[in-house]
Image (tube, helix red, strand yellow):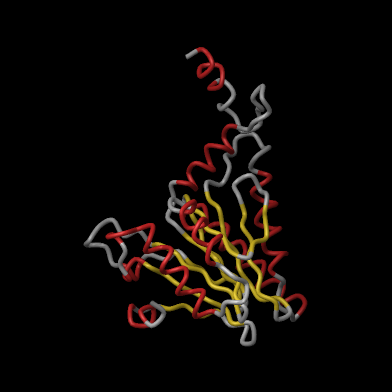
Length: 237
């Protein structure tokens, strides 16, 4: 009890390190992400795909009103896990940056610039008094120079580039499946099929097409496309 009490004294402010060199508020934010809905991203040979679990908990809720995957630009998309309201603020910031870049330079913004801008803001919220960390992680995908890429951003402001990964409640089990079955040579159809099978394994009897949201960007077209109906998604099962 004495150790727990001492640790609690260092989680009152984001600017205070614990004696063992941890920012406890950031770690709490990571736990929020772990409790969020399951989302995943996969880089394929002909594009990149995002798959999200909407986690519809109320049968009276309209599934189409729940949005977990967002278009940032024609060639960039993102999905969130954790506090979706925090994620929406970051997504809107990214959308504005993408628009400003097109107006200023008449060229599409690169995905890394979007990721870095998001993480710069996240980092500021880990060392400024009166603020709290963003309780959300984002998977950001895009196609730059005909190269599909996937980034993960964490509440601490750090980012990583992946070939395939997942975040949220069932992420550990899905990452284990991806480690076994994912290959960079798979195409979009195979990638979506793999993602759906992994999500079905995690959700079990709770898996329903109504709670799945899928979006992809083809390498050649560089255009964001979302699968909005059960019939479209079922083709990939």
